[in-house]
Image (cartoon, rainbow, N blue to C red; front, side, top):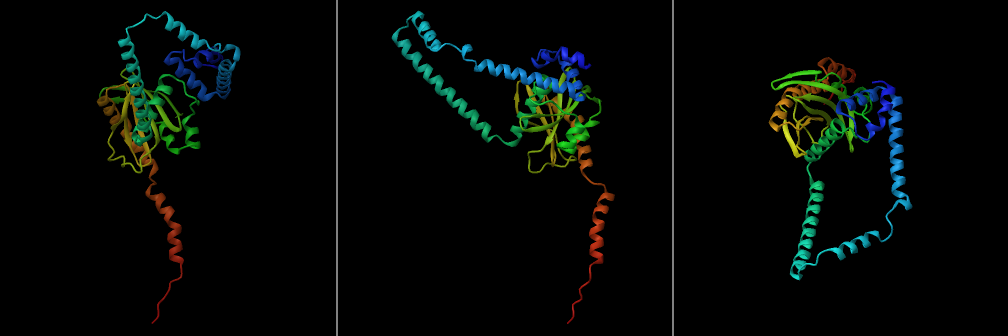
Length: 300
């Protein structure tokens, strides 16, 4: 895709009207073209400004008292009901309101008190939906190398891992996109894959846990509650979590994580561990200082 092609479909891209494959082509072009990124952002700001101006325009607002008049009109034309039914309907509406209020309060409490794994799963699903499926991120994705320099050097591992084609027991998984994106306040390294006709997101992010297990002992496990049929399988490490998100069956997604995420976790752990030669080099100045320090003799 070139710049001219993108600008012809830019508005359709912002309106989420393009096919999945076309969206991938647009994102790949935006990763390498600052001019088109600026054009898309300018169009987005213009759309937001127009929407805000429309909402604030007094002449476009409903006439004062319109809602009350409509409510009175509907009440006048409604069929009168027996008194007993009106009484029970009133209490039913009151009970429904109480149940709704309790439900809303419960959701708020659950969100406030949810453990880190629940919050991580929600963010992973949100990023998968908004980046891999719907392409409606508030911030544009950035190349992995740029993200490695600005945010977390671990993202550099995703430049070549997992490989573009991965043979698994259930079929071949193919990488279609690599970048770094953000959902809410969380930054992800994102590898989009196609597997058995489904879209699967492999996400790497900083771990919320105090300490994870070494990659040699970490086990893929399901976290969080499914949302819209999407599940999350996590491999937890000391500093990062590697997540797979998809609408695959949980058992199948866990098996895919063993094939795809576990080797990546071991590679990430190896990249974070200095080789013995590096440790020797780091300790050399300390040893030199110790050996050159004057000895202290104790005399009776």
